[in-house]
Amino acid sequence: MAYFTRAIPPGGEGKITLRVSTRGYRGEIRKSAKVYTNDPRKNVELLNIRAFVRVPIYMSTRYVYLRGLAGQKITRTVIVRAEENKLLKL
Image 1 (cartoon, rainbow, N blue to C red):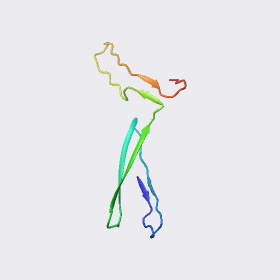
Image 2: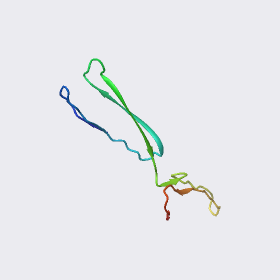
Image 3: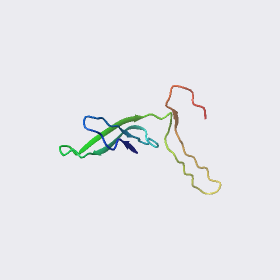
Image 4: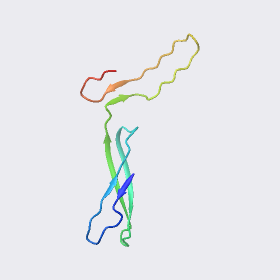
């Protein structure tokens, strides 16, 4: 999502605000946005965004599927780890 100053007077300044959803991301992410202007010398400018997303809880998988016959013992392992330096209670 982008919000920006539509018209900037000569010698003036504008503002561009970019909002990036980090839901579902973990670790380093890179995003970019193109800015189009009416400047004949440089009508397109590329903005690069680099971020590191930290999650408080790491889980090895988001979903666990269990399938088997009635009475059959089925096991799956999910690793849950606290990524912050404090006790994690489940």
